[in-house]
Amino acid sequence: DKAGHKHFMAKEIAEQPVVLANALSAYLSGDSLILPEPGLDFTKVERLVMVACGTAYYACLTAKYWFERLARLPVEVDIASEFRYREPPVTKGTVALFVSQSGETADTLAALRYCAGKADTIVSVVNVETSSIARESDLALPIHAGVEIGVASTKAFTCQLNVLFLLALEAARVRGTLDAHEIAQLIGSLRAMPGLFNAALAVDPALDQAARKIAPARDVLFLGRGYMYPLALEGALKLKEISYIHAEAYASGELKHGPIALIDKDVPVVVFAPKDSLFDKTVSNMQEVMARGGKVVLVTDAAGAASAGADAWQTVVLPTVDERLAPLLYALPAQLIAYHAAVAKGTDVDQPRNLAKSVTVE
Ligand code: F6R
Image (cartoon, rainbow, N blue to C red; front, side, top):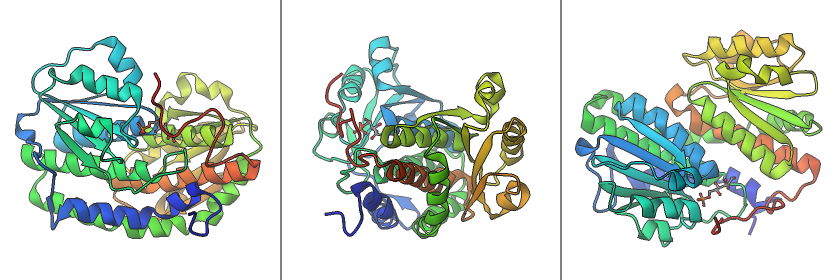
């Protein structure tokens, strides 16, 4: 049942405020995290290894920024199909964490089995609680996204981010890298996120307009720095899988190391840049793009739009958010740009060619 939407993907994007609010109430009691049994004691953790595929991998990449910055915990992130065949050393003191919506992705499951008996603890972050990956973990953390039908993952991504952020906060609390006041503040910001999601969904007409401009392009570039870099990767993946437009993402700082050669008037560039601590650097990369005739869709907040929006092809203004939580909020415009571009092109949004919802072959 698409609940009045044209596609499951549209329904699942629109559901995110409600789904996230539910997920938050499942995991939080006041400012304390509630974990399923047997829980996880971060005092003994020396290293976190996170493994996944596709969108779930981008959730892990985002979480690396959180665990490192907030909890000062060393983190490695890898794609399951690379990790498993590389046979990397997994030493004591390591927690191995696997993220999977379906819980059945063959490469992720094989990577988990490789770590079993080597890592101290096997943790999974899953949507399907009865899945193989959940069953074979010491601790399985449900994301509570509800059934996801659209092949392109949307609400599962934001709900994965939610659980990973909460885990990073817990690690920070136990390791003493954030004090109780800072943790309470971040939890307060997270509790405000469903409201911000609603505000972001209200920006849909501007995102639709941007997507229609992008839709005729053959190639699109996505740029972001810091927390916005994994999100740029996710935006590019969403666009290519459902609209079949070739899209690539780069960390903004990498632009001049090669991809800037691609820039001309026919390659739209989507820049995710809230006015955070790295904003000025991203804007200077954006200006390098515009100086070469590149057309920029700038996704930012009011302060960012006021200081850099004037020259963009189109500026989309999102609510202001704590920069550490921006990946959750900016996921929505990434999803909606892809969705509207696909609708403009008339592709099969919920069942894109060559793709399956659950990849149970290697
Ligand atoms: C992208 C997408 C895929 C999945 C990937 C992992 O929109 O849906 O990239 O994220 O196949 O699937 P799970 O999370 O089920 O392991």
